[in-house]
Image 1 (cartoon, rainbow, N blue to C red):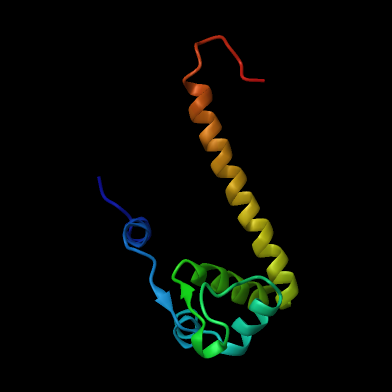
Image 2 (cartoon, helix red, strand yellow):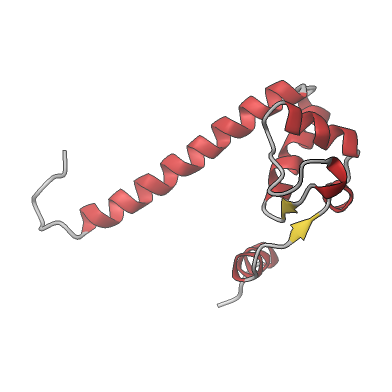
Amino acid sequence: MSTTPKRAATRAATAEPAAELTLLEISRTCAVQTDFIVELIEEGALAPMAGNEPANWRFTSAQTRHVTVAARLQRDLGVNPAGAALALQLLDEVETLRAQLVASALVDDSAPSGTRSD
């Protein structure tokens, strides 16, 4: 059974502890200007996990996904940072709801045959 590179990378990323990135590191990783990340922070789409000043801000490696998605929304669809913040919030909600559905399906599967959970 072979694993696609994307799945292997995902597994590796989830197995490693979350790395802390500076503002410059996350901007380089996501190939965006630091000003773009500052705009995302101002719009509430992104929150540094540490630091009060830009020079001290720290981000998780998982936050690179938000920056990358926001950059694509801006580049491909012309979405401004406020719109990207809204889209990211909605995407996070969809992801949470999907996880809840999967969890409830696992619980429902354990119910005796012929019973329903509604």
